[in-house]
Amino acid sequence: MLTDKSTQTRPADAAAAAISATSAPAAVDLESLICYFQGGYVPMRDAKISIMTHAFMYGTAVFEGIRAYWNADQGQLYGLFLREHVERIRHSCRIMMMEPVPAVDELVAIITEVVRRNGFREDAYIRPSFYKSTKAIGVRLHHLDHDLCVVALPFGNYIETEKGVRVMTSSWRRNADEALPARGKITGGYVNMAFQKSEAEMNGFDEAIVLTANGHASEASAANLFVVRDGVVLTPPVYDDILEGITRKAMIELCRSEGLPVEVRSIDRSELYIADEIFLCGTGVQVSPVIEVDHRAVGSGAVGPIGRAISERYFDAVRGRLPEFSHWLTPIGDPV
Ligand code: PMP
Image 1 (tube, rainbow, N blue to C red):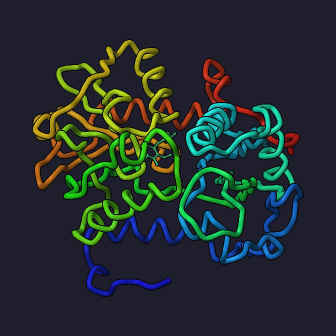
Image 2: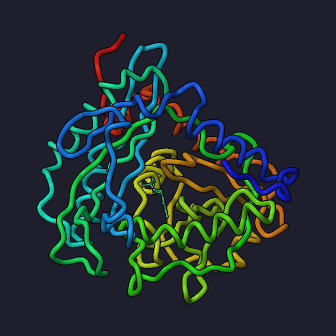
């Protein structure tokens, strides 16, 4: 991996190190992992595409990031929100003119089979992707074939969740729905987030908060945004150019089950500076309390009580320790 030496001693290092240490653990031979490719289950070393593939040349693919959590006490791996992710990727396919696609049940079965064949006994990350598979020059969506691939690998924390994260407002705006819909999880659209994430990390922060074209706080580079003001939990609406996060929906459910009022409304940048608490949520970041925005402490500057409580509940739920949230989970493979 190439590293920028100028950033090596900056505060974002802990998070950056966590990413490189956990996203592809050295002990894992990626090439031997089983993936789904061109209709079959094969080792990753046999899953290759041409450099002429449309998705490679133009970013015309859609994807999901899904987590599976290992519960050591139960000897059980749980896929988190599998159906919800599959429903969202089917919507992304529709936006990108990739139809037909397999039914929800069939996609869930393929995903669980990839994970099962890898026999993980630890947390895992699953990445299904539909991509424009035709070998062709010519930027368009129509008259192109598409195909499905699914990879799965062992995976830990994406960014620091315990001690809170430091964020900056990005100078890059969120791509608007009328330009490149954030609602679709479109590979090419993630270059927008790459600009934001790199700007934040290279300036010594862990994450970026991204504004819409008209200046509302939309979300983070790969996570949805929650702000607590006067005991009310706020989150931006779907028309503020967010990805309609699956964890966001779960957070709303979790907050309401804890008796916390949740309001979905646009959030101004300056509200971030006077918030009592802020937290980010998403498949990758899980629940990450924010302790600093643009060099201003959030609340007391430490992880706040609501962020801490919600994050503890979330981690218990995803590991299958809370029966009332078992509908979030799909057991994968037999308990061992
Ligand atoms: N926003 C963006 C831009 C993302 O990439 C993600 C991660 N998928 C999220 C929000 C969080 O979505 P989810 O909870 O569905 O993972």
